[in-house]
Length: 499
Ligand code: HEM
Ligand SMILES: *[C@@H]1O[C@H](CO)[C@@H](O)[C@H](O)[C@H]1NC(C)=O
Image (cartoon, rainbow, N blue to C red):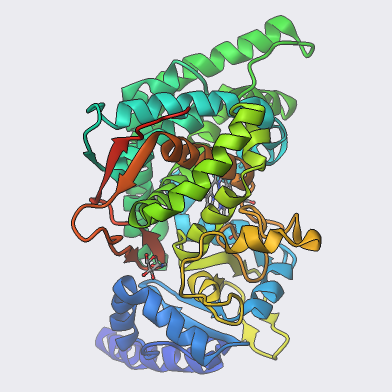
């Protein structure tokens, strides 16, 4: 047969096949925000990149109680709307709606992080287990590192105001404080180490961006060509591997009964690796992954909180009173922090008002899933909850559009509500950490760490923005929420500093 004929036949058949497949695919029966047809949907996907907040809100308002879909450049994401739907989503078992597969799909971890981590994410049980159980032992070190890192981040100008670009400063504080209990002194203060860790997050973001604009069929090819994360792992490894090797040697030397083993993530990762028959390499990648999940989210969150403080200096007085009392009673540590209800409430309100993502509780349908209302979500589809729209929903919060720092501590004053409404409590109405079985296992540490940073700043500095004093607007990249990255916060030593 004439080769040209075959080409023509294929050219004719391809669009038809695509149309038929679309007709049959239940995904296309779910209402779309933006254009649904193949070519214009690219335009909507570009729009989503800058206008995600508005598009998610539009879908949320229109399709409340059900689902809608929004376009990314390489796929559709189905978004559930309303607290009841968030609850429905988180309840599906892993073999229907998988968190791990969704995270892998979005981050492409096997290319952007490291293959071993994708195959054996052992940092997750270690963070959920020994790391979180030992928080009380870790917090004095975190407080010490926060004090030292803040001293380095905010130049001492006597009693003068000094402007500091907040986001990079907070990122370094969080990086040092976290690594103090991930891997310990002196590495947590080593500038080269800090640069590698912080650069890595950016490298992954770069890789991830390239992967989202790469068509699904080409992903394996392009993924293997991404150079950055492999380079970062190599540099990270050069500094960290000797310390991990030493930890393995110490365990061999002391045996299981090692009484005064250092209390940090490195130690517990080493124990886990030995228990599961793994070597030092996997501990190195697990430390890098832990940094990846911990630092960026925490830096964003603490900067949001700092911006609220700087924009509303009147929040400082009630916080100071509470923090000073708790520290007087217990010294810096987990006990004191657990008594700071107003600070907890302030941080939770900041997280509600200005989260880290417009979509959370992410899952991937592993099989065709039929929702209670009959909608079918076909296998392979990414699904998530409209976090920001949920948090700004008047049905879920009175005066949802008002930043009300002590709304949650006021609710807890009620006897029956004591243990609810805390920074770390997830619910269908509160999903900054996800919700359900896969909710962030690092949030107990994050809560303690971030409260330590803010408490330290509130006790030692007055804070404000320059000019009209207003908080600069956030930046959205697709569903990711970032605080303004360049804004300066002005600090002045508090005249009667007390801690
Ligand atoms: C304020 C800071 C943080 C925020 C907003 C945050 C948010 C999240 C979210 C939304 C998820 C996904 C849950 C879901 O979709 O259901 C998650 C997962 C995770 N987070 Fe965090 N996180 C923070 C800090 C941390 C820290 C400090 C650590 C480590 C010490 C950490 C470790 C993890 C891990 C290991 C997972 C994966 C859980 C799994 O696969 O089951 N996070 N986090
Ligand atoms: C963050 O805070 C500002 C006000 O300070 C608000 O206008 C904005 O809508 C908030 N939320 C997000 C997610 O952008």
